[in-house]
Image (cartoon, rainbow, N blue to C red; front, side):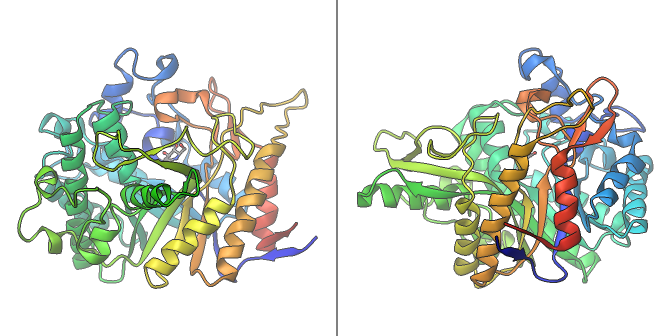
Length: 451
Ligand code: NOJ
């Protein structure tokens, strides 16, 4: 047994997102979001589930903050629902919507917990999708206005921000594959959406900086360790292109004002809709990057790929060597160490926060009402040990957020996948800390653990 000790002042937290937990989908002036529309469309979400009520967090600030306090967390990553702030995505701020987040921040601060908001975790106002959605580059300016309004409205209570959550995932799933809102399936729409998001990131960053010079601003990106399926050079090159496409498509533009060389025929400038001046407009001197990581991706050379990458992932989420979560995702802790070190190296020691990491297991209350989710504890032990290795090797990692505080609405899977450190009774919304939540509390208290 050896002791794994994290740096002093390290932030221990949990993460959630508005549509996945809040419910109250049309309360206090909130507008319709693309996820309201999508989930209300029959056949889109497993079991017909919706976020109409979700975990009812809109009415349970005190309960949620009490859970964080029980674990001793020092940071809470949550997201702000754009249609609560601007019901149609433009115009005056809806005071009641803003007030919900002010009350949440007040409660967190009173409990000694850092409010750590994300501006956009996928719930676009439906009115803006009706205007063309993310493929419409006008959305960049709208988003910057929204970012400005939020930072003006909450900037006295929150100092650390993420602009986007997983832009690769919401553009690919929403506009290319179509299994997330708004359910579109076009390569052109997808590429244009990615470019609008990069412009929005740059413009929002500038607006936020202008209204609060002291704000600490990052963005949260989905990442995985991209590993070749076999030794031949062609697979290694394919894995490298996949890394550029899936991991840094929204980081390279922010930090260097350019797209990474992911496509075989060069950056698809026309398809992206690149215009003169865009390289500068995309720039955002991020103070940190948030990494959301769950597993690795095995990539193979694929000449048949019709999208121009010459690369395709082999299989689903991860490989087949490690154990699988109940969602079928491979448990592969080294992916976290390797990815953190790669970003550390490639971006000159840029500060990193782990903004999500976690696993879906269905373990339910036993006859005593306890939830003995041993596999989740083992998952966290493995990934935290791997993260610690990256820190020992020099990576500047300042925080870690477990996904998730609560079992919640897992997008097109509905409530079928439970990622929480807390069990949520889907009928009553009653919350019960799982064994993993109690274990996490001990890790937080000791700033580490024995392994
Ligand atoms: C990524 C997303 O940010 C979050 O919304 C989702 O629930 C988790 N990962 C698990 O899939």
